[in-house]
Image (cartoon, rainbow, N blue to C red):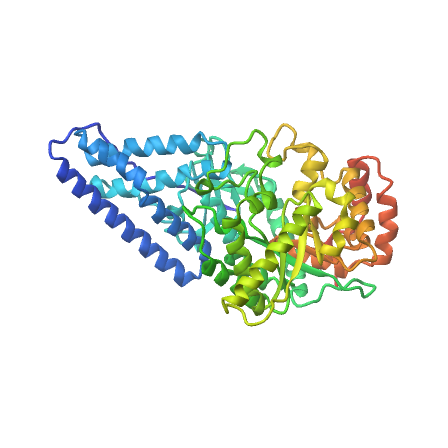
Length: 561
């Protein structure tokens, strides 16, 4: 809740002009590039003081983009044709921005914003102009058509109550940064800058993506009550930061975190995480022009393991493909990328991608408790190859004296391809654990593209088939040495947690923001009672019926420990 602040971009007008001195224009461009790089370096230093690794990684990616030879060469070609440096830069930027926007990959599409960001900065030095003042003088809800990453990082975050953007996406760097700093953010709010004025009073609910402009006193009062209730519930949950995840009938569980970067780690530790159930290692690759070296990866994995010791850290192998493409891999275009060359399939075909990661993981294993998890597994043969490669990497590291003893670690797979459930008994001798990735599992089980708004309602965790499928997985692993975890969004659904407890999932891995609610639910639940609930739930014939049954479970925030 708070006043609106309409963020306006610096408007730089570029005319189509000729220049007879192309050498002078090139020198101007070089100077503008040099000053822009200095700006980025200063921003990087300021983020180091804040301890924000995500911000630093994004700014480093901006520097790499600024140094892209193809972009600069195209600008120089236009200068040599007789145009000014400013017009040449604007035209080459339009070309590369358009190229990115026409890609099918949502993440790479969002990089078009980064081209705009850098272009505006360089043009600012090429053309003398008055900068628009965007200083927040009071805590406000920042509203803009777009908000570029460097613009976001230049604003005092303590003054930002929330962010509402017209054109951005959840894949944009600004949305990623907002999530990292726990700032409520709504994207895709069409025409909001036209319907809202500075100082309008805004109510925003980022969870429901709802915005109210200048609500009446009754709505304001209700919102204040809702906010106060939310604060009380969150305060009540803080008692679970130091509590172990033990049910009312004294059965132990683990509530771990899904992490994408080291910034997430800090948030998770503050919430009392019991390890990491899923580290999305592919986020180390995004925005890079080449593979990170083995020692770079090793340092990141080592930091994770050291910080979460003695808890377990499960690192998923690069899950590339589907909606996460890497330009430097030159992967072929696929008609159905979610069903194509991705996950472990891709890693086994690209050993230059897989082996440095396995070596880095094995070297880091001595610093804590490590689990190595393969995504998108379909066959027993894939798991055998995966394990054989681990042994090859072990021998190499021992021979090179990079490790002195055989590393200790656990090997597991993500269960997200439905076929795996029917061959789990064949895989158990090869595994130490499995972790069910419900986000993709539900997509494949219900034949539903979760990115498609037309059928998104069919991507339903409460579909009776999902619960029955989880029951099948639990049955196949019962009485074996393999332990079960679950790392999809379903683990953060408080009403569903008792069913997962009854099924035998010993580890639930959730986003850091869901840690305390999930732990509270476990601590307030009896496994014996949950088993009776499960028997009823398995008879549900529809999503509505299952939701109705689970809806009678008391809300976590309303209960006391």
